[in-house]
Image (cartoon, rainbow, N blue to C red):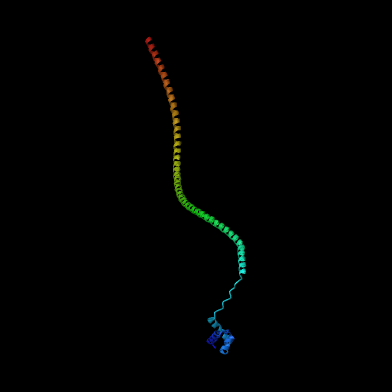
Length: 226
């Protein structure tokens, strides 16, 4: 027994208006295993039988109308909460949109501030670089000034040493000059004394000459009388 035997027997039963069952097929082919007939019969039905259409579910008109009314009422009652929820959602969405707009505006402002801060930072960096250059220039000038001051101090020290040497020479000259002045003063005093003595001597001489002249005059007068 094979599928063709089962299919041929099932076809004859169906054509004769007899229900196609395992027992009917087994009787038609004169025996066989029920499990094998069932397996071949399932394949035959899948290929030849059309599944019966399920009966249509038709409701009474009054029931349909009542169900429609109930559905409408339910939809309205359910829609009340839904509409309220939708309204809340709309409000929340509007608030979110406003918050989003505010955030967008704030982001734009922050970006602008960031740009300004970046520009300020760049300007500050340029200023710092310029200040560093200025500090380096001033440090170089300070080093040069220190070098010049050091050289000036060294020169001044040398000059001071030279001046001190000259001061020592001047002190010696001053001592010698003072000694000379003292000697000159002594000599001047001696000269003055000599001059005074000379004046006295001249005066005495003049007196003597006057007395001699007077004596000569008296002698001459006496001679004339004698």
